[in-house]
Image 1 (cartoon, rainbow over the protein chains, first blue to last red):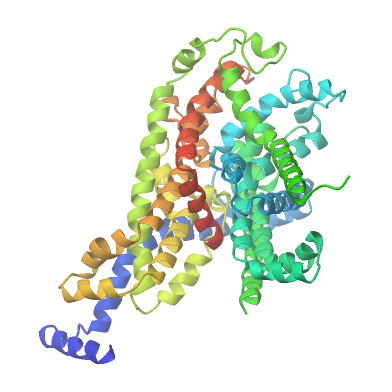
Image 2 (cartoon, rainbow over the protein chains, first blue to last red):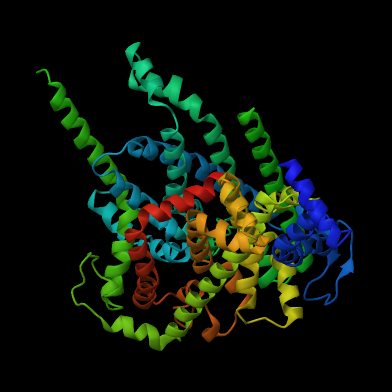
Length: 309
Length: 282
């Protein structure tokens, strides 16, 4: 292989002296990645750097131009009474409700559906269907179903004697409604990841445990669950990051309300930037979101390394 | 009474079906309710709810097109999703191929650089992108809706998916291509791409759906009705006070969702696998 390269390289060097095979490959490599790289620099990295500068300036409807104000926007967020802590509390509440619920349901469904059999494909298809549906459509339909008295959910509950709340008009219930409908929308994705992980576990393990007289629950607790640990960790981090990104779902179901009860970080950024045009403050919020997501990503990478080692 | 082994199995099976069916209710019910309500009149929608409309109002589905330029908005969504998918396929497979097969200084660094972008939410960069697009003079056009998904975290994810696939392909055929005098570009196009159909299909499926369902970017960049994409149009079926016109909104939502659902039901295995591929590595 090396010898071949050398002869080729020599052949090439004769025609264009400086263009060795290695250099040629490097140039071609950069040419192949350049469209992606250039677009990425302009539309992703550039804006990411710009956000840092925006976040250090006062730039809103009153001050038409951006003026440097140092860390004022961050101080505003962290100390002044600008809903920030309320929003963070909501975001944490949202994640703390969504992640365990999503993962527990995903794992339960995956265990029920990991072995081939009659009906398995049907149920998998059903549970995954909301994943391919647009969040907008999903939110619109659920908003319709969860209306106060006329809503189908409450009418159904009335049949079994439960007087359902006006889901989307009461702050705490609105949060519950948003979390649950989001879980139903996205749980199929984690279910699929868990199914893949479960199918990768050799069946011998289970059979060996069974021969030694272990019960179904013991097999799960002692064999399956430990073997799933790397997948569980990754799914947990991905789902947590995903929960911080949720915007469209909340925008359409509750509009951040009632009484800002479902105002989460992604929505708050949108609202400050595009409804109130407080660009400086919104950018500081975006930076805070970036740091949160970055921290979670680093945790994930560390866990992944630990898992593979 | 002792159950035989066979009887136990039957009972377990029945419990399995019943409990899964129960869990499936909130997954299926919204779709059924959406479609049936799309056929109801504005008044019936608030009456005693029933899954089957008293009067089937096909008219709703025509009114949807009168209320706003819905056909145009539908077309916008289709052509934007196709453009995003096509460009993403070409760029991600080019870059993914280089990262998998070619050795060049800085490749490792580049990988690290791109990995860092995978998880950053669009919300973080949307504000500067807004000013960038305004400066470029492409506000209220579809340019941002094509550029941002192609070059954002989703594009990076597609590049990685392609790279992982190329890395696992056997090199022999490409070596043979080289012997036959193909250029690098020729090897990529004539040898590597035809072998990577599953990865290309996966990228195509998730990219199309990603673009089709995009909401934040249309909301930020579009202002005139005839430029709207479907998700934005769906959110716009409201009376002058902002209250939803449910019968029209649900009819329109059905029109937007059902075709995707039909394709999904036909190709569910392929589609689910595509998401699994992107999820495992994402």
